[in-house]
Length: 116
Length: 109
Image 1: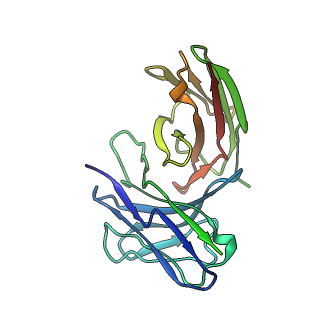
Image 2: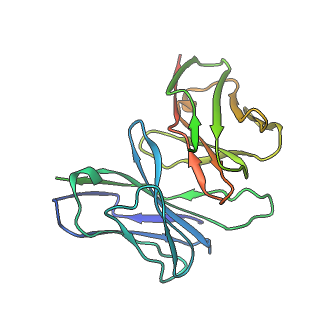
Image 3: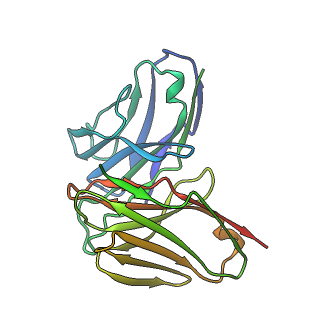
C-alpha cells in the first residue's frame, strides 16, 4: 500500500530533551515536507526537500532540523524542544511532476507532540 | 505578502448543498488544491484546478476564477461524514503550497 509512515504517533517529552520524528514513504517521491498544524493557524511548513541531500527552510524552521540522506526517509529533529513546539506534525510527500500537473501531497497520519 | 482566505466555520443540514469559498493573493499561480481533513486525521486530496471553470467529481465540485483570485468547493447531498475541515491551498510561482487556515464544516441532521 502506498503510504507515508510517521513515528511516533504520540509523544510527551520535557523541555530540552532531543527527539526525532521519523518519516518514510514507499512511493519513490522526490518531494517531502514537514508541517505543523496549530488551531486557527492551518498548516505551516517547517522544512521541505526536493530530493536526496537537498533541503530548504519553510515558513517556521526555527528550532527544527531535517536531513535527507535517502530518498524514502525525511526525519524531523528537535534538538532542544520547547513548549511552543507542542503541536500536531505532519509529514507529506509528492512526485515533483505528474502527468496531470497536480503534484498531490500524500500525508502521514500525524504525530502529536507535547513538550512540558 | 501571500494570503489565502476562507471562512473559519460553516454549518449546513444533511442532504443540502454548501459552498465553501476561498480567495487568494499569491506570487504567481500554478494551481489550486482542496483537501479534506477529519478531526485528528491527515488531510486527503479532493480536487485540483489550474484552468478557469468547474471541475466535477461526484458530489463534490470545485470552481476557479484566476482573474478574481477565487475558488469555491461545492458539496451536494451532504452526508454526516462530510463533517470535516476543508483546506484550500495555492501553488505559487516557486511551486510552493500556500495554505489557508481551513473551513470547519458542521453538518446537522
